[in-house]
Image 1 (spheres, helix red, strand yellow):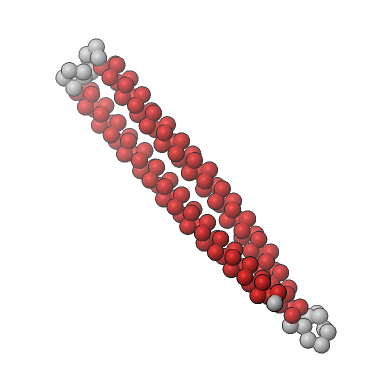
Image 2 (cartoon, one colour):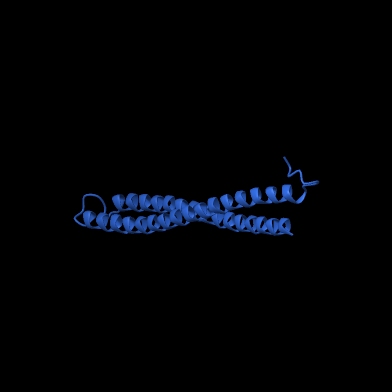
Length: 131
């Protein structure tokens, strides 16, 4: 009876590891998405800078150029700060999931040792004690 309880517990840990691994995979995909978003925003910013530089009305050499440049830079910094905040939250979530996964693996290892010991004691014949 004890063996089936140990096996049930091990199956529970296997299910938990699978669930956490899927969540971890999801977080990693969102991290990849955040990196791609940063790259896209940087390309858009570079294109806007280039367009502003050559703009006939507000381009380089005009009085409004500095103001427009500061506005573009401020908007870009705000977007990047928002994305970086998102990335930080994802990093924390990833670390938490990895910690949970490591904890479950250590529990699983302990229960496997208990199962092994239970199997040895359940199959002892003639009072030898498995020695």
